[in-house]
Image (cartoon, rainbow, N blue to C red; front, side, top):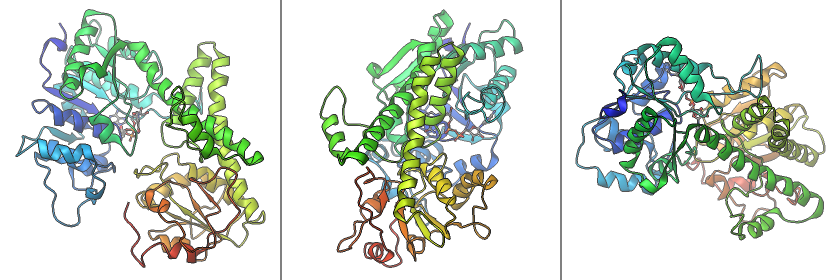
Length: 503
Ligand code: NAD
């Protein structure tokens, strides 16, 4: 029969990224008798998960990982990861409940084969980026890593191991998995579940500890239902049953793409209104407030700005358009494509506004960019709106572009900027861009300061007696922003000397 008849003792999570690491840690925390091992091919990432400096920054994550991995949440003295300040209610409460000590049940390893061989459940949470070449280039999902992980499971797992799609995948991927399993192990039952992850970076621990919903998609077979029941039981250790929704597997797969598309669509919708504001003198924040008071619309995701970034929204909508087209629905594809077009238009509009404000030339001028992360409270530099803004600014040949972000590492930012190298010399010494670790240095001699991530530390930097404001900020950019230039002096007044605030 199936593994669902067995108690779940061993979980293998394939992929130790933004989803795999935190998800596995929270499952382990709440299921102390289950051994949870996160595997990844990336030795550096695994070493970081095992060490004191986790590879990703999320409020509260250090505490959860310490409890599950080390059996204690005790913070070592100085030099620690400095996330105490950002510890949220969920993990603060948690430190109090799981005492005094517990047996460690969260492990990180590069031993994929051995871990898969022992697993009762394999969660697949590898990256599923957009294809960069070949058929569907720029839109279709690149399933290479996902298929590779499935093949590993097909080759090494014991019969009956439950496969769980945690990665965001196109609708009908469950069938692909079944085909791979059947080709490798004909006649052996491997139940397949879809359990998409809805966490947001920056609030991952809170989202995992108190999810709005846990969607579990299964096939309508006996083994499918048994497998779903096993996964439901793991979640039920901390999630109220009313929030766990067992549904059809195809619905579950599509629900993730649909959720991201709907959220992104709201951002593009309000940004389209902000463009009209720019021409008319209406104020988009007043409009957003009024819209949000309508209970049918609601107040979330109505902030005009530079548009959405990050590793998910763009790629998931691209995947949805490709899926629609391949299903013979070009009208549906065109509808969602517009959400992406509006996002690009917004960045373009913003950069043009900056350039126009600086007399249509950046020659000999220095631009400062405060904030590179695609949103606050994350160190994730992937697909940041800042990249598109920088690309457009570089076309005007600025003397210097100085970037400061409180959490994104210089290496991560430079890795992202490398895609621009084909067209420009980007980073110093050959190009104008530098990443600096001090906001004062970043702002020195600057002609314009652009706040591109809504970090609280920038929001609180309100010029007190300053004569001017930032020329264009994520907060205020709605087309009605006055064409003021923030001089270094006005920013300097806000920051205590030589003590840049920590995130
Ligand atoms: P990530 O790139 O941070 O992590 C993926 C990891 O998988 C990498 O460390 C990579 O080395 C590893 N990997 C790839 N193939 C492997 C293999 N065969 N064996 C072992 N390890 C392998 O990605 P992420 O941001 O965690 O996203 C993972 C999935 O979750 C994606 O499908 C994404 O769309 C989805 N998702 C992401 C978020 C988010 O906020 N980042 C939220 C919800 C869903």
